[in-house]
Image 1 (cartoon, rainbow, N blue to C red):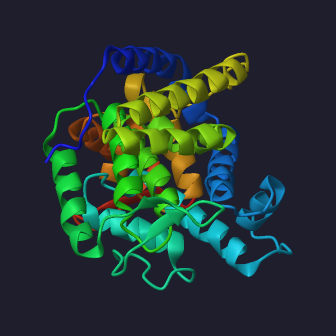
Image 2 (cartoon, rainbow, N blue to C red; image 1 turned 180 degrees about the vertical axis):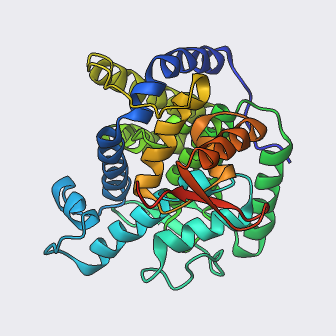
Length: 332
């Protein structure tokens, strides 16, 4: 069943503008390891702050760096959990419900009793006066509603960037979990965006939502009243565009750092290796599926790259064809 929305000229114009800015930004963001790390921390801080986590950006940075921080243990656990979930963005299949539940488990383990499970009770959102603002779907319907949503995601040909906004809205509307629905809506939109273009794994769209938090909640309410997500989709596309434009202004003036390409590599493969190497400096191993998302190339092309990197002694391969992973040579 298709969620209630229709594609407007405003949406299409925003998609075109977003695509243009991405073309200017992709290499600068993907190759700037420091910027990527800072953006990831900002994403985590902003998404948690929207949910009233009181830890500062500096405290969140310290927690992620493994330092001791004086603060509410639950809030500290939320930061650690969010970091674990965001680190998996490029490994999640955005239209696989098992991955969606795994992400919720990572986000809420040790905080919510039903981590990684759809709720079994009614849940609602209330204002400061105790009035019901939004009621989630009845628990007996949650599983089927989410299955329908993921099935639509797999089969529908709506542009991915618009589809990501629809998923975000539908997650908030259905409210499938006892807790963590806001964080999951924002995280899963990022997962879908990163699957469309890996630059979104490193851009803090959540930070711009946090800066427009009041409008964000008002737009969700207006969409509920209209019983369709058009207004929310247009709002989120504007947020995404604003995020990209902000980073275009701050990143592009920075001189491009020289990228060391190993001897024996030329052309596109030579440009791909530094991106893989930076990823592997942060992660022990990488699978072909993750490398495909990271590099934005076909699976066949990425497999050729990986084979050449192994033959040149840059990477090591582990396991059989189906479960094969790659790591940096120990000398690296």
